Image (cartoon, rainbow, N blue to C red; front, side, top):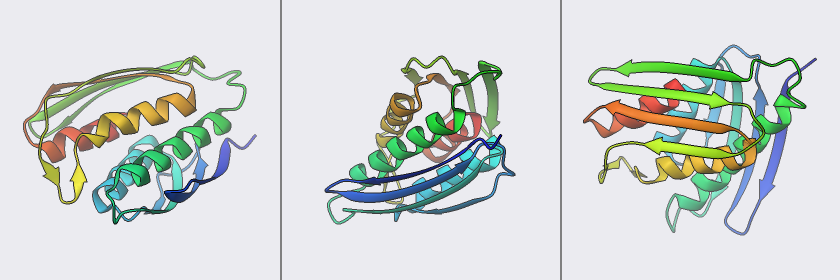
Length: 171
């Protein structure tokens, strides 16, 4: 049984295509127009053993919010569809991931009930053009449409790039 999904999502602000294979090899082709977000999605695929293709065109002339949000909603939908009825799956998983000075703990429950607990230090800086305040919104969007419970706790970290990247590696 293939645990895969293809999701097309179109709004006034963006068009998104997500192709996901849960039992993949960590390969990815990501193009959202937001380079740091592309890098984070590639890390999610690589460290999660997922094959992931994402193509998004959004209103980046405004900012990255709609592009990142709509991509995350489509990714969550793809996860939900690929999980199917969830029969026979191990329901819980967790990881503790270091990245230099940063340490992140994540736990997931494939419960079918969306809930997010997200704890990270206040990050006010940009990483390139990426607004670090979008990170929580990414997890909120994925959780809502994937129908999962997710806890992400940044236990230590000062470098904004490391804090965000370790979250994607741990989930």
